[in-house]
Image 1 (cartoon, rainbow, N blue to C red):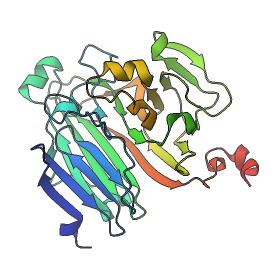
Image 2: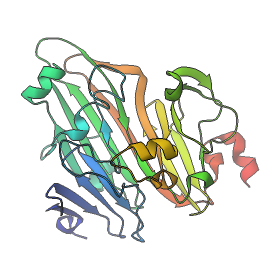
Image 3: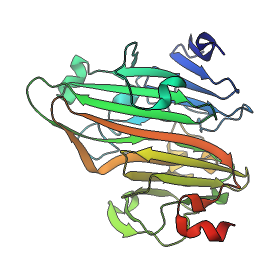
Image 4: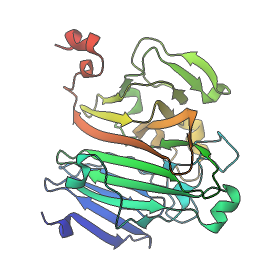
Length: 313
């Protein structure tokens, strides 16, 4: 497939510009320049792997409830800025000459985006930065996002931020889903004033609202969807925390851009850096990467935890 066909810039029906990435085997991803946001990731059978709310509002300045919103420079209400910061409701630009990345992602179908602060942004967060985002589609249909944030302040001042890829996964039935890789870890419970608890030893299952920040998490986390016989694997670097969120029925009904019953068909597992904010001095750069893959559920969670290998054979 030629690179021209693999990457297409077009206007969506809602009038916003988006980039479509297509892999030779048929998988695809769609990225809106508004928010620098992936809103679609399909496998080679054309199945949508990310959740998009049927009531999502594709109208600035509203954030899009879909896919992978970027939370920067603040996660949630962990600071004085608006919820989840402002990167998800700014217009990003295509980065035509990005500095090289020491990964093999440049050989994959990819797009590079960049966000710099506007004068208005500087009033609410007075720091100069370059946020570069590469979105790449691997030959096996894997979706990779690499964020690079550089402090370009000329006044010598450092800045501090928190970050998350607020990924909405599409699942068949939340009550039939479990998450592996976060057992026995400490977490902050956002439903209990960020109080710290320790997770029990079993895989995480869902029967009510959940909003937790797991700390010091492994580089791989698995989401097992029994009904679809599909496992999502999140691989991450530079992102020690993982947020697990499902609003359940009451919160779902309270959100204007979220269907009343849609909580049954989504789960957010978010690679993040929250508990220990990132501090950059001028000229310093931080990098955070996540790679998503969807594999048949014969995938053995023993690959996440060597002690479990024997139990899976």
